[in-house]
Structures are given as structure tokens and as C-alpha cells.
Length: 111
Length: 111
Image 1 (cartoon, rainbow over the protein chains, first blue to last red):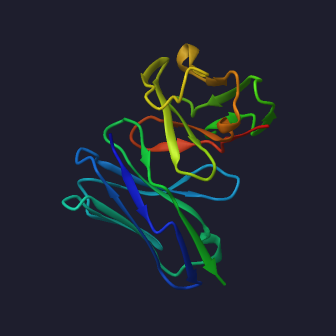
Image 2 (image 1 turned 135 degrees about the vertical axis):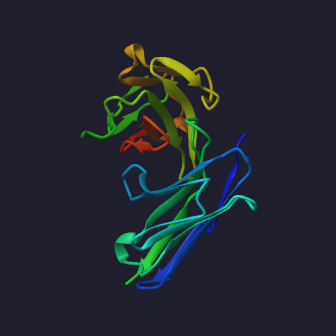
């Protein structure tokens, strides 16, 4: 089955700096890669996703990149703000099958 | 449009008791998933319904867990009898296409 690894497990950045979270996946058939943000006491909220026919996608301060050859994908958050502090999960899936999550990255933005 | 709703939001039960978690997916979503996050670890897949049929139940930990989705609408996840290691947060999610939307979770504590 699919295996998703995520690094780092914790990340502290100063407000205004950038944050980068990296993931790798094992199943070359995976074609959908969502990123979720989980705030304390809440469920995972989809913040951005990318499909395998696209190499990069951007939405305001958030961008994702995908390298299918290397089976890497990354989340980039620019101009970080305190409200960006949360646990971020990368995930991978193929078709309409289950999503396999990474282990999560706890991001702390220091004001 | 209402999101995925879960009930109860929090539950504390004694070891050996039974708990039933309920999930109402987004209206029109045929795909319904159960996940759980135990002890701050990764979010792990439990099972996947397509309408009322179990598409994939490979993540169900043991026969103390029973999931149903009669009529293809809401779903229930019953834990009987509950054990201490079942404590965690149980997430329900639903999708129509690739994009999976999560509920806020049912936080279960077994004492």
C-alpha cells in the first residue's frame, strides 16, 4: 500500500518568514495530493491540493510543488502569520480511493 | 451547504462499554470514510463506504469495531467493547470526486 513520509515533525519560524514542509510517497500510481491544516480541537481542513498532471499550484501565500519522478511534494507558506500555527498533514491517494496521510508537521509561527 | 457533521463531539466511557459514533456526510456524497488519530500519531484510515457498500475496510483494527451505512446516507461506527487503546479522535469524511472533506471529529476517551 501507499506510504507517505513527512518532514519535519515540528517547525518554528518567525512571523513573516517562509515555512516549507516536505513529503514523499511510495506508490507511483497515486495521482492526487491534498494538504490539510488541523487546528487544535478541529478536524483537518483542506487548504490546497495538486494533481499529478500539474507540477505547481499557488493560492495566495500557499504553494505546492510536485515532482512525480522523485515522488516528492512540498508545501510552501510565505509571509507566515501567527494564525498559520497548526498541524499540517500531507496526503496521497489514487482515484477515489482512501487518502493516506503523512505523520504531520506542527508549525509554530512566533510573533 | 452543511459540511460533514459528527456526533458526539466528545465522549468519555469506561473500558468494556459500548460507544456509537455517528457521521452525516455532505448531501450527495457517495463516498464516506472513517479515520482515526490515536495519541497524536498520524491520521489512519479505517474504512471506506461507497453508498451503502463497504469498498475498503482494510484499516479496521479488529472485530470490536463495526461500521454501518444503511441506506447510503449517514454512517455509524460502533466500538464494543471499548478498550483503553481505542482512545483518540475519530474523523469522518466524505467526497463526491477526489476532494475529501472532513468533519470536526468525535473525541473518544476510554477510562
